[in-house]
Image (cartoon, rainbow, N blue to C red; front, side, top):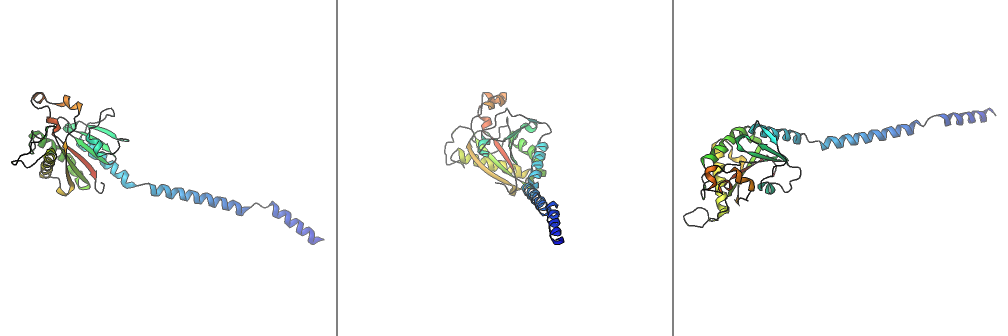
Length: 240
């Protein structure tokens, strides 16, 4: 009889005990979930991107001490070739050196409104063009080791007349030779040759805003002066 009573008491006490194993299993599952979440965050965080973003902003600040964000300003036509999409573009106006820079990710496109880099049909830089590139190098040189600089040169809309006396036979070849001249000036000013890339883009696309940027002495004599330009693209080493 006592044995039966002991069995009943044991079953009752067992029923009253909490399911410690089940509680422990739930806590373990929560811990695994937290660990998985931690590893997802850890591996998705790329400190190099954060560092590069800081370097990109430092380059912009180095080029100009007066930086103004202007989202309403129209991007130059070259920007559409530089980036397949304009979504997420942060446009930054750089007023020092008469330059503008458009940031796309870690890259920066620099143009020089109001600067005519070449005389008509010539491959040698104008004094104004040389001065603009030399001033740029002074500010950019500290960052040159970690970046590549692409040089994009253009011609005005006037078609080149092929001649045996000329080194170029069309506008594309003329723009390519102009990019070489710009690269040599940058190299002479101190930029390492192995950090630069050149490309000729042929005829520059017309931009209505350029009309107001022409100096008075060019408005009647040379309406296409600003089409003969050079654009620079700064990109981190290792990017395409």
